[in-house]
Length: 400
Picture 1 (cartoon, rainbow, N blue to C red):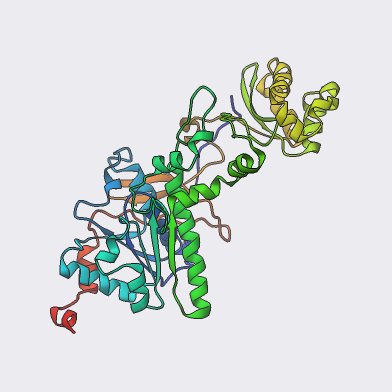
Picture 2 (tube, rainbow, N blue to C red):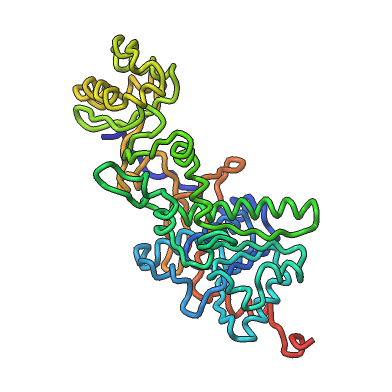
């Protein structure tokens, strides 16, 4: 059970140029991209004002066909391809390859996630491009890092979640290893690529030199796994699957109420004392030596949770949450995706698509009180004629 719901907050309609931060206005990004990881990065760049040319195969980025839930369009594609220019290319054709090379000669950033070695075989690998264009920033995204035995393997989000150990700590005791419900490896890698590109642009502003960036899905998830890694390597403890509990903090999890549930999160010894005394109103619990520190509470989690549950099961949501608010204890409820659609804390923005306007959940950054406005999601090849005219390369020019 949750508190009162309200409609989404929607940005007032205005010119998107007035809404964007435009920090990257004038930056040209050429993206040889597909699926999720690289499109996440280039979506962030486009939102910040960069011009992003999305190079697609003849049939289009295969994420265009993942589903048809967004008014007949792919929900994945609508989410992370706004504000880009779409151009179909066949890089085995000399004219198309020459056009892409003409784009790269003017580009600030080239980012790609083709199979390892594919761009090198085409003559547009990062090492070669950096020699020809010293100011160019290149970014290669792969499943596994260069120099590792797995580098040439195909790798997708779920494979990486499992391979990097994330699935082993996700779920609960009865579920077995479980996938996180979103494409976390792809999304986190795309955001890491975005951050690395921004750093490279700042570095180039100081030095005049571009950078050669390489990221992998495995490294990204492995970095996120450092706490369970350290727990196992130095603590000798294989982190358990705890569902909605926290492996390092207690109490932290879902408790049943008389008419629903509540998720409690206690972060400090002071908060534990406040919860026990002021919310649960149980001095014996506050003074119990088994629960005198977070380390002890985690070790005695079963007994702790049972004691809290015994108190809360008789209390209704409407009685518990005011007490939690008064005591400044963090709490929440377990929402369904349906709940998210009407969640009072959610904000949406409207993105124009070939199928009409679609509302998406807004990117998180609010800059000077404003969120980025959504630019249009492109049809396959929508900007092809204009781009081919802009970056036309004659046969005579190619031979010199």
